[in-house]
Amino acid sequence: MSYRQEMTPRQYARPVAAPGCSFANVRDRLQRAGLRPTRQRIAIGWLLFGKGDRHVTAEKLFDEVRAGKVHMSLATVYNTLHQFSEAGLLREIALYGSTVWYDTNTGPHYHFYIADRDELLDIPDSMVGALALPPAPEGMEILGVDMIVRVKSRGAK
Image (cartoon, helix red, strand yellow):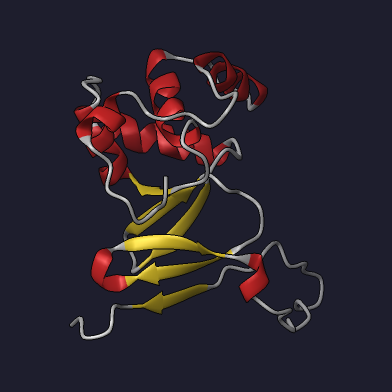
């Protein structure tokens, strides 16, 4: 499914999984990351990892949880996303102060942020040339580089 297609409530309730991604795979992924596979973590893990690489905010994921008739609070979604990030299962991307996006692709890559649609997309590696980075200050090392290109639809305010 393309990131531009809208999901129907039926697809939220029974997400289309990536080949080989089952509840057992989610459970195993959680256990390998040192997390106990609770019902809530498995449900959120299924929504996150069963659909391939994706970007979500806690609020957007909470909407999917509710549409899937899973009962949990927004606070549980926030806490679980934070736990997944701490365990290395998700990458946190902060935009505009308090908005945090969670990315299932934890490897190095860059993003487009489409402001008028409030959407975050991966920039294909083939579109990004090598960037010359300055050396880290003495006694420090570079942990990673985050680049977000903010765009909007032509004619959008």
